[in-house]
Length: 508
Image (cartoon, rainbow, N blue to C red):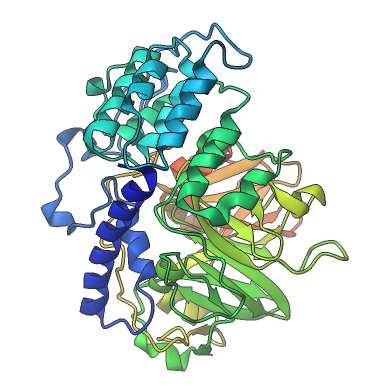
């Protein structure tokens, strides 16, 4: 089976499930959002949670709390020592030719499993990265088994020891490689680009920038195509992307009575103008380009990270067109990879730094502003003049209140490598980066008690207070500073040196 055929089979499974979901929800536009839901499960299926029990070892994911210095994954499995590297330069012998033969076979009806075996016997563990990349697209069958065997031979790891491998061998393989921070070979980006653009040619500009600061080892396929529709396009996303919502229709708070008070919104205030973005709509679109308080905003929501962020996209150097943010269909350690539609420059979604393309060359880092995670009732009470997205998103469609249906309840479903055990992996944290660059995280659940008693929490030069049912941050002199919430595993992996506030801590 060729890589294209493997992709088509995966896509058909996804979109078939998506179409069923769409009929149930009486959707009137694209089914791509539901395709995204299906795709981001471990085996590209989207069963109801109650009929998809997880192995016992993963039912308490996030409850793990150990501090013995050993690297563990989300199931508590301890990663073994990394394999030794005897070559740090270019591939030796016939390995390049073997890889070329394998890559050529990806365009045919029969993948060269013999070449996979030769690569596995090469003794060069760096090639395990390419085996992991291929595993993403071959989720079963003889090619899949050959890739797993090749990884084990290259690294000496028996995946049977890792509970995550019961769910997804690909996830387990990639978790190992991330945990080891295993080096790759100089030709890696080229081979990865050739593989990924077989699936989505629209990704080619991302791989073309030889100076990109993207760590391609950590980049994986999120299961959907690139959203390269023009700004304002409301037509169905026929190729299976996650469609951004541009300049959404909004209503007054009074007209927002359709949204239950207890449901989650992401609130943003710019220049005194407040707006609420309902979570269930953000779960479908994952990206909004909007204007609020006279400023242009890009708002990505990474469902996998539990993280909504807001970037002032008009705060760019003179001569640079205001970026239009889109979802690429790629992920890095379970975080969505966003890009600018005008220049096809990739951004680090968590930090706003341009990592590739013309915006990288211009040194652009998008300025963040605060996103408050709250309930609609609390937000509306605190901001009675707020607007809220229209019930139909301005698209004439309907949105289920729970489109993901518990997809992420048992922990990350994409590779994240080792996890920080100081908090449960899916604990919500309020994250702030101080002016001096120090990242600081506050456990959202643990903040509520001290805030009720004291009115504020001070730590490391930062002050956290309550606002609209959520949290805002400022410096000690009262200067506001951008903050947002995220799952702990996501914040910790993108800010590995983060300081963590716990109850009882105070001051700097």
